[in-house]
Length: 315
Image (tube, rainbow, N blue to C red):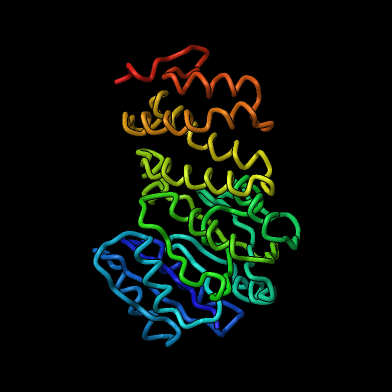
């Protein structure tokens, strides 16, 4: 059986669409664990309707504790041999569970993710079927290529997850969980035969994080860099570069006024780059220009819009 875990928080606007896409699955041996994280809209009513129609749907309410607490509670209640995670404002193809289960001889199965906005496809991840060992899969995960960084669009063997839980963070908790689980896997399958539809939501947690980035991003990035350093003989240099460049993109957005400025984020990100400076200068995936830019950022200067700005004096 597959346990489908859905954290729900004020998701009434889109929740019914997702639950209908679950009811329409060609695969039948599954349970749906709906964890209501303290919603104050009509989410509970929508869940109740599906409970009455289908006994595979199960509803649990918790006081608001965040998505990590909801997913962790969902795993504790799950009874399936396999686990997959869905977000309440997204959608899946009717063959989603079928295609993933067909490949469940692997420890983890990953399917394509289609990013959609205003009814249009913006991008997708996977073009071909792949059989990967652990290190090949982790490299793709950390390079943000082919394998998306979140827990969705994946089928996990329950035994591979074991006692691993989502860390209690506001953001980037997903990639830390996925990295921990991938680190225990031996065999990962990737398929374009079904799709997870990620619907961009301007009111969602991701959009809010982009407007006001949390320092959890830096905490998580340091953990990822620590992992890369421990396994550097297996890791592509791009894994290191992509991890740091993601942090730097948030810094640029703050300096350019595209998101909320945080002095704490700037201070902690400079410390992260300072600790990584030797590795930055050695990394073959970082261009000479970027090595200069990153090095100068550790002293408080950033190059943007064809000029240098002292971030220490900003705001």
